[in-house]
Length: 265
Length: 297
Image 1: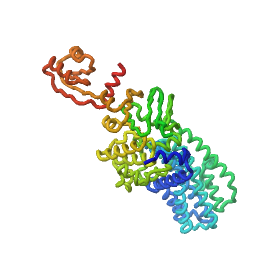
Image 2: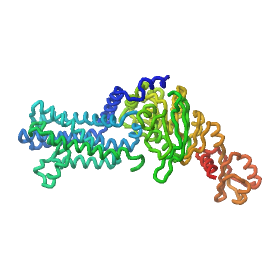
Image 3: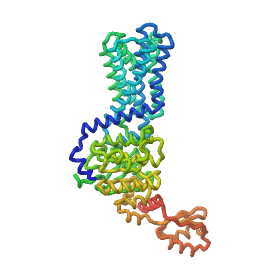
């Protein structure tokens, strides 16, 4: 037990990159386990998109052209991947703080960015599971035919969509308590999906909603998705820029909430 | 580096709006020593711990852990912490949690070592949510020690533990202390502090009332609480009990004294019908409030 002589000279006080990589791996694994073992999270975030997609694309005759079939898949892919990040941060972070878990972790030698990155990665893994489930239904029952590269690109958009979703979740989770977060994040999730035209084509919506849609992050993700699937010509600069701005703004909004002093807000 | 104190706190003040949670607290903790922080609820124990973790910003004074700023990565990597009411994700297993916390550190114990030393090796596969309150405390203790900290901060660690778990906890704390870890623990129980601590710091309303070896503190706190029914009135009692604080209401008297036998002789002489007599050792809360009154006077 000569821990004192062992720890100091080898490391100085600097965190080694190997330790951080190891911590990130275990932290991500813990986030993933926590998400999949929580039925209140995993059931709706997996079953809602897959269930609704199956209903619209397979049961009901909406996907009557190849393009309509692909568009439906894109819309429900974006709907499906927007949930994990939004809820993992929006509800997960709020309840971690309410329960005192965040406080204990802040006292550990785990840099906060590593903690946040791990949570994002855990949500990305979950998003990938949703994407694979949706693609399986789409390619078999949904009659969607895409080029191999288009499938891969759409999956990539789906996984990367977790980044703006996580940033928005962070803004909610940093300021709300767990109960309020549960309600508000649900409204934000379903509301933004409808207002972005993910559930029903925007052309069917009142013009007021059509004009709000471009303010919704999923609207731009769906645009990227359609480009990835080859439904629209690729010009990702504009939606990517917009989503980057949303991400930065949301993180900036979250910061003072994360740093706010202890005690009841 | 090796002779640098684990904790140096000087004149620390923390204020929440109008309330002074800590008011000029100073203390030093050396490596290989165990300091027990005693005090009633609301004394500022948890605030002091939070300040040591960098979770609460002091308004004045200074605080350093091994010369490092509290809350810095350097300070955190040398510190193991057990906090009250840490809601751990209930769906993770004990082994997964210990493994996770081990991954945060450069030179951790193996998860098995930490679980054995915390006495929870049999719970490794259980999910945290399925454990009893005492078992959860044991898991939190394992999380605190798995990184081989040089400073261990324990907030009411034995809360809810059964006797066996408590004995195991103290055994491990003592062996870590003997190996050079500095330990700071808060507790309600003076006997805990008495058995383990090299130094006891009494905290009340944000101030250090006393800071001494356990035996000294104990002698200051020892005393008895006496209750009885009497026909004597306020004036007669004041004369008889000169210098001792007492409460009289509805013919029932309550007082705190270090010499109950002597007072009892006088009381029985003045009131042979004195009844419903109870004499028992004071609780820490009582003794502390007596000490606080003494200081205020």
